[in-house]
Image (tube, rainbow, N blue to C red; front, side, top):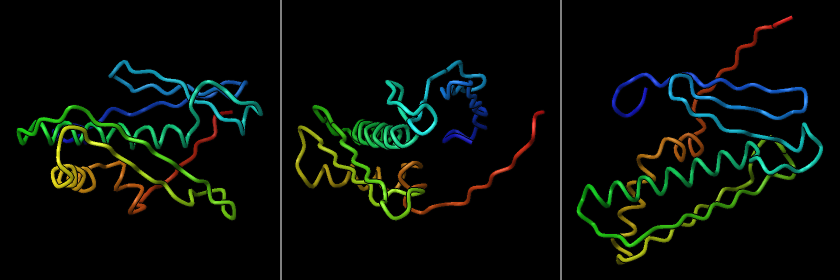
Length: 143
């Protein structure tokens, strides 16, 4: 469900024999591409899975900062997010660290801190990464 209480449409992920993946949001008409060096063996212009994750985190951060500022009548002149992820060399199934650096322009540090507290407390992407959260996988063979 989304924040308005509506069920979110399912997302379909498909791959082709070249390793490229297409992601579509059923019912919303959104489509984007994802790629992976692991499958293709060569770099691609399409973002990989970790890039999509940190992009979602940055997008959520900026959306939360802007919406909270607007909701509380705080005039900001802009915001930027820089996300750095470092893969764990001893366990390639996880990131060793993810650093989120946010600059909020046109406000004091105290106001910027308040906006970031709201982001940290309300961003589902940030909190899913931070807490781990339950996840399940099911499989169906399609011969």
